[in-house]
Length: 449
Image 1 (cartoon, rainbow, N blue to C red):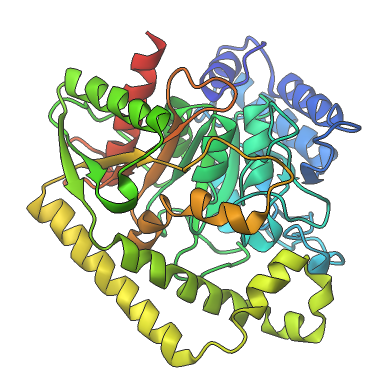
Image 2 (image 1 turned 90 degrees about the horizontal axis):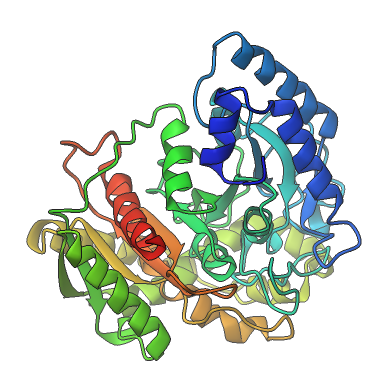
């Protein structure tokens, strides 16, 4: 079995063409092969014995005719700010270098295990998930999976790398402002941020309790839909693109000046129109205000989480993270409360207009303003280009999915699809997620023809 995507792996396991034990052994061997390479720091922790024991159980269940779905017996990686029982959660930081093993799984890991998935590793992240580059971590930066001179994007850097290198078919990440979507865009894979609280955050180390999301990284949107639909409590139906109303964002930052990015959007919109979608130009006038309140809310909540550690020993943080926390030290509570209330008001107004007045099922735009950047780049200079096209949809709390534009090569252009559908008729249990996946899948499939 050469392919390492979810659909091929699940099909081979279900048909008895391979075993979970052989699959997991291959994955562990591929993880071993990272030692001594530019990606030797991508794995933060692993328990091979536990993974192989879980594989043996999956084999027995499948052999007995009890295959439960496309994650059964499949290797998954987990970002190292998400608890996995028996492994420490260090969040890429010396602050937690002595963290004991977690006593229990995070709830999202429990759900993965309920679906039959097997955790093989915890992965690199931008320290405490507080940055979009993947450059900042006590173990060093995460290199791009196809060019070690470039960044991977973050903060779910390691999860994106192990999927993009074909080591695992599915990985867990978190996304507060861009942290699943940006590394997916830079690494040429799919990064899916479902709606806020669609996936549980219990056992996930927080950055912003207001904006944190849990998300999935997979090879493409078809695999994202398979993984999403395999989770307990999710009834995912494939939504037809024909008849959907899709808004292409225009005005302000949404007027893309890079001709390659603009052309990728043009092609995607033509594809959707050819398939029967109605594609219209729309604006998001709340954008600048959302970009203004996001760092206030996120920074204030991050500082509250870290205050005790940071004031006791700021030198244990990487300098870039320490600078971000230091900037929050004297922020007034009234400023935070005003920003949090404004964010809530902006989200309510924008969603009402987009859904009720514009009657949109989805939006489309780019994910980032660049394909990647040098490992020598200043992280401060990269924050805007990697964050600003993603932040509004974290403030809105709606599902957003980044997929590579067809033909982008090893440093692709990420296209971002945002789900808005609210009617449940024909859309399953999570209509906005189904709409986003449908639009993304149409763009990707057409690009392959």
